[in-house]
Image 1 (cartoon, rainbow, N blue to C red):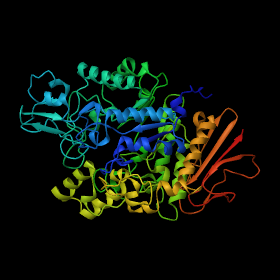
Image 2 (image 1 turned 135 degrees about the vertical axis):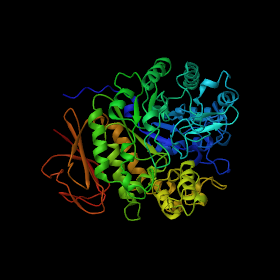
Image 3 (image 1 turned 120 degrees about the vertical axis):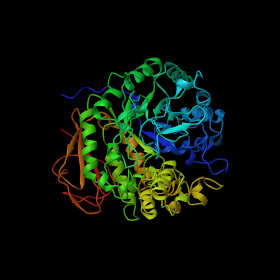
Image 4 (image 1 turned 180 degrees about the vertical axis):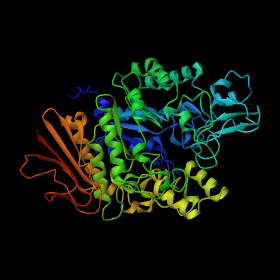
Length: 562
């Protein structure tokens, strides 16, 4: 017997992620801004989304594009002012669109006032706001590699001690064991809630509790050890999040989603438990990290495509094992991932639109809250990197320096080929609004190159084509709002032995939703839709069908009584 699902607005919502730097530039400086977002709210209203998740807009020196925050209660100069933010919030709310902020509290910028004080002396009151360690045998305290390459420890000459930075050396990790740090964070979160925001996406929140032993990690690449086993899902992470929930989150009607690196299903059941003591949902990374180390050139870097069968096993597992226990978040791409249609689909001229619609169908009919990344709704693709000079992402640039220049372990052309496939910069090229100069993103020089295919792939063209990817997403969103079975139906996998077709059912009361998606450019056998069975077609990316088969990249969704 299925557990009766508790209804909630955030389960029924569709979220649209905006990467402000690349969305819309209103003043011609080549950088997207808050006013540019406000000006395009009618476009998002037309799409039908319920919530905007804003990547960080706080004051930042931009070492990691805003994920290095120097002031949590101010706005980055590039993006505008707090008045601009207030106007955006007010205008969005007037259109019944909610705003979710990106909460980055595993670390700050090294230019944050707390860290400036912390590094000034060993006895400074802010010293314990961060994680400081003495040298070990005259070197780093352990062998951990930063997520952005190189050591995760930086020697501070002033005091002769190392501070931990799981990411850039300009992103020192906060010490959550210090009660004052938690007080500061919770007070800041309350300040934003009182301003009227509607929730938080919590950056690497699974990393806020570290193993207090700080041991060496298992060998990662012959140079450093992995920090993941000792910084993800640490000993006090659930204790801290329950405290956050009690002191802040439970006092407001919020959407909360945690980016949970290294999360397992068992951990997810704690983070996103049905009792609501921590978060609404988490982002897991298994389905976007299916490549075996043997398929990678070095570290995560690969130019091979993942297998649908591997992805299906993972997504089905999360659907089945969280049923009645916790809530899923659904996504193909975001600011840290390559473009979905290039990574999982087929971005050729012949199949880009079909495969973009197929991927959207496959995801949006699952159980969980779906996330759309800016440009996904018009089928934007990966770009091409001629040289490292085309890159802006600190992760890619550091990897290039480490593996191509310093250790000479990867040829330049191979590294750039990997960037074409999975670099984060693929998601960060400017939103393509029109076929005009710079895709209508800016009248100036864009901070990162616009994908040259903007002349064909842009929002203006999509809005003028009734068969576009945009209107397909619009219909998917409308169907979710109109059909409770899409939100609350129990998931049952189908055709799990097929190497080409991803299929499943969703069942709620007497309704059965059947979903079948062909992940290939060849016609595939699919016996799920017999003519004699009375059913209604809800959505498909083809206007005609061949009984017993799915056409190349065909997606078909039907509903019937059981």
